[in-house]
Amino acid sequence: MSGFDRVTLAQRVADFDRHAHDLAGHKAAAVALVVVEDAEGPGIVVTKRPDTMRAHPGQWALPGGRIDAGETAEQAAMREVDEEIGLTVAPTDVLGLLDDYTTRSGYRITPVVMWAGRVADQIAPNPAEVASVHIAYESVFDVEPLFATIPESDQPIIRMPMLKTWIHAPTAAVIYQFRELAAHGRTTRVEHYEQPVFAWR
Image 1 (cartoon, helix red, strand yellow):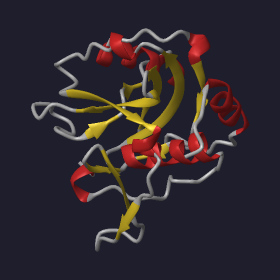
Image 2 (image 1 turned 60 degrees about the vertical axis):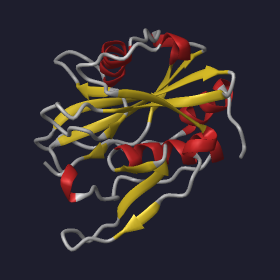
Image 3 (image 1 turned 90 degrees about the vertical axis):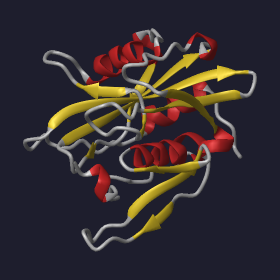
Image 4 (image 1 turned 180 degrees about the vertical axis):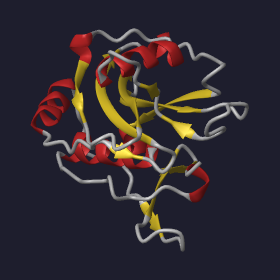
């Protein structure tokens, strides 16, 4: 594996020519690719949603949610990181945006890359929104995705074999694009990858 640090990632994100999607009747949302560090190195924060949640219960996710009126994607992602996992990220720690991903469930998701640093031990998940928190180090997220076909779509489903499970789109698509950029310096488009049918609702 290549290894990456804040300087390298900041430059790669700054050079990234992102694809933005029109809302086209969708709700605007943001997710955070929060890089934290500890003795094992840098990794991104991945959460599992409680089974009791009304929307997408039990699914794997990145911290995030709806963009409120008057907010930017960056501001929404920072707020959600604070609300969901108890971390305060400074505006100067936001490195930039990846491609928008429009979901079957009616959202346009904007991924926000941020480097929170050595705060892994300060994570305090909100049990109303987060069942568990996991740090996916490069050894975890730098894996090849697997693709599958379904009769309901012409596009392949993307799955990431991580954290002893399968993570599906949209989370898998966002993590895969981050993996390509952070670990390998590659621009790989993911907006066309499909979600499993259970995530369409």
